[in-house]
Structures are given as structure tokens and as C-alpha cells.
Image (cartoon, rainbow over all chains, first blue to last red; front, side, top):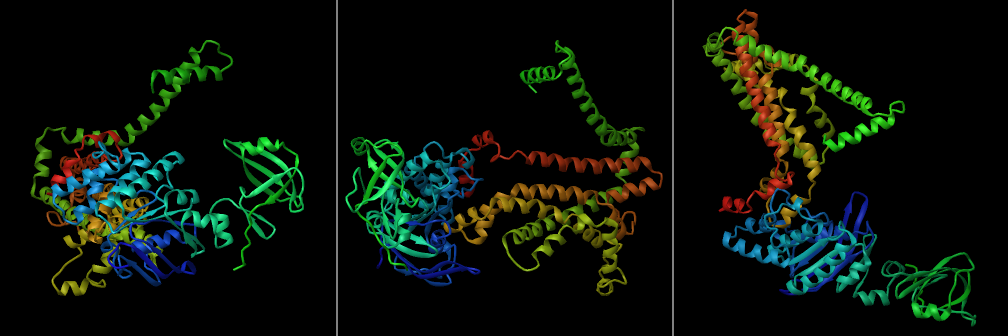
Length: 323
Length: 311
């Protein structure tokens, strides 16, 4: 990777007592990239982020940042920016002092600090808040302050641990878009942890799907959705149903009035209008529930009503080898 | 309570009482019960707290300013005052330093015997001060474990100032630990880890992040420890030998004057002691004005101050 600010994690294992948090994990994040670590809670994604930051020491494996093996480097010397889920704001300091913290530790002059903090406050849109204390800010503002604080030291990489997890849905959506734009502006290699697949697909260029301390698959959002490598990825990234041995996405199903030899009989339980999209909930003869995603036009054409018998045919299915 | 609240409560009281259509009597009854409740609380405080303290003031100055002033400015009185300051001045800083260290160890570290250490901290609360005094004699007395050796080296602990300082340290030990521990637990480790990722060394993290975050806990602990150290009688009395002008702190001086029928001196010294304690309590109340808790106060704190201080 040379002098570029990419991150490589090589064969990292981390145990807490008997619990294996990470098992032989390897990932690679390109310079300037925006990567999501996606997985359910307990999948090891936060531990992996903390290992990269140096907040946890791996039992085996290496962490390489900018071509330099940092496995044995103290967290203070790694020059990483870290953003915590619950902000970790220094409560006894103003917004200004929070952002200036890392610069003061580095012994920067007052003039430099003032100028840099002013620019960062503009970057995270907190103008006029520099004299406030964290408890006078909203959750979203606190997290933007934490981000500015992490960026102040010009870190080689930026690591965000469920950064929007403690915020309500509306603010979360705004911050998502804003983080995406910020990344375009700042271009620092970024990894963020999330359990929300929509958030990962919305923000990240590359997604690493984790489960049980292992990497299930990594790739672009579209790639993961269209070519999932395992049942886990199929079911975790985007909606999916299992029909016998095969997996199918709810929008890859054809609904007909007449059987054609390839179809399965089903009864309509509910027709749920979600705007342009309509979710049709069905029950199969074996009692399994199953839902199909159609457009408003398709539903009008089919004239679907509840308790009606229809015939469905998966257009595209996937069968996974048992691992 | 605002006028509106009072009206609502009167209304509720009236509704609860079906026999009285006009609500004046219901209201009266409620006011009456409210006043009698206040009366009970006030009377209790008056009889048990205010009256004794007020009486001491009265008794002290019964014969004018002369006798009490003479008593506390006597060589023995001044020495007692000085010795109290010495005991507090050694015990409280030591207990603050080790209290903060102990609290950090107990909250942030995992080790065998942590539970035991945690309960040992409370011993001074649990054991009677007299027993603490006797225990110190058993260790440092002439026939005690270290006493003989120390005496050979020319250090006398019991019936001397070092023993009194030790007793004061013992009784005031738990306060800082017990005040700081819950604060450390509450702030968690996020802020400290954030400081580390920003390049702060453990020492910088402690001074710039941990200590400011726990400072109110430390302050309360110091105030409580000081109050306890100032007033300690039992343990200090046992190890002091009560030699006037040599091993008498203010509380011992008060007792000595009292048993020698020098009431003016006893009362005067008691007032000095009460004043010291009052000053400590007042400083605690001043500390309560916490800018991070008080939303408005922070606005008056110019952000630049810290920056200027750093420069």
C-alpha cells in the first residue's frame, strides 16, 4: 500500500475469556475509502474497530495503517480519529476546548489552534456554539462536535463506532447524508460500524459484513445485495425469504391469477400500501408466511383483495451450500 | 408552591370531602395539616439542633467578650487550635491523594481481593473511634508491634502528635474514596479513551479529563473528611494522653476546660470549632454551584478563559 493511508487488518484474532470476539479476520480498506462494518450485535464489528484504533490489543494478527505495522503502537501514537456512539464529549469543556483538545496535547500555538478550530466548527456547522458546554447541545450537535474533535488532529484514519446509534431516526438520516458529503470534502480513510444495513448501503462505498467474529463477505453495496455469498448475507443485507431450499427477494416474485405449472398457490392475507410500493402478505399451503413487494400499478392491475387465492412464482432464487 | 397549585390542591381536598359543599373548611384543614407538619419539622430542628448551639453562644458571651477571648488566646488554647490545624492539614491531603488513587484502582482495575479491599475501606465507619484508638496503641504503644522499635529510634507515636495524626487519618479515610467511586463509575471510560485516541498520555488524560470529571466528588469528599477530622474526639483522645499545651486538639481542649469547670473557655473553644465546621459546610454549598449542571451559568463563562490560561 506504500505511503497511502489505507488500512489492512491481517488474520486478527481477539478473545475475551472464552468468548471469541474475532476469529482470523482480514480486511482491507483503500486509501480515502468509506467502509462500513455491518453486522448484528455480538458479531465483533466494534471489537474490530477498537483493535484498529489500538483500544484493544489483538491476541494474534497484524494491523497495518499507511503501510506501517501498528499492532504494537500505543493508541496515543497511532494518530487515528475515533468517534464513540455516546459522543464521549468532555463535559467540563466548551465546544471550542473539546475540539482544541488534541491540538493542545500536541503543543500547537494559540493562533494555530484558534484558526483550526474555527475552520472545523464551520465544517461541522456549529458556528456560534463554540462557548457552549456539551449538555447545552442536542445529540446530533454533540456528535458533530465529537467528529470535529477527532478530525482536528488530522488523523490518518477516521473510525466511527455506531456514530448515529443513539440518535432519533430523523437526525440519523440527516447526519448520514451529511457524513457522506463531509467525506467527499475531507477524504480521510473512514471506517464506521453499524448494525443498520440501510445505513451501511446509504453511506458506504464498501461494506464488510460480519457475523460470529468472522467476515462473511465484503464488497460494494450493490454487489452484496445482488451476489450474496452466504445465507447470512442474503438475509441480513436487504429483505429475503426462504422458500424450501431457495432464497428469494420479495421483489423477485411474480403474482398471477392462474397457475402455470411453475407456480405455488398462496392466499392473500393483507395488502399494505406504502406509497409507490405495496407489500402483499401471503400464506403458503404449508402455513408459512411470505411477503411480496409490488408496485401500486401492478396491484391495481391484479385487483388483489384479502383472502383471495393467487399463484406465485419466484423469478430469481438462490441456493447456498451449507458451510 | 404557586397560587395556582394551592388552588388546585384546595379544589382536590374539597372534592374528596363529600359532606362539605363549601370548600373553605376542607381548605382550612389542608392548610392546618400542612402547617402542623412544618411545625413538627421545625420544632424537631429547634430542640435538637438550634437550641444547643444557640445556648453555647449565649453562655459564652454571658459575661462579655473578656473571659472567652482570654480562654482561647491562652497558650493552651492557641496550641490546641494549632494542633487541630496540623492534624487536619496532614490527614486530609493524604486521604485525598490516596483516596483518589484507591477509588481509581477499585473502579477501573480488576484484581483478586478487590471485594475485600472495598469492604476494608469502610472499617473506620464501622468501628467505634475508641476502639481505633486502642488498636493504634496496640501497634505503636510501648509494648506494641512497632512501638518499641520506633521508640529506640527516638520516635514516640502514642501520647504524642504522630499518633494523633494517625488516628485522624484513620477516621477520615473513607470519605474521598466513597465520594469519588460512584462518580468514576458514572463517567465511564469513554472520555478517557477519547483523550487517548487524541494523543493524550495517561498522565495528561488524568489531569485534563479524569480529574476535572471527578472534581466535585473529590471536593465533597474533602469537605466531609475535613469536618470529620476537625471534630474527631474518641480516637484522638485515646492516643493523645491529653497533655495540655502538648497533645490537645480543640475537641480535647473543650472537654478539658469543661471538666476543670472553666466553662467560658470550653464554650469559647466550642464556638471556634463550630465556626470552622460551619466554614467547611459553607464552602461545600459554594462548590455545589456546578457550571456543567447549571445550564445558565455556563453562558457566563467565556470560552476564551481556558485558552488564555494555557498560553
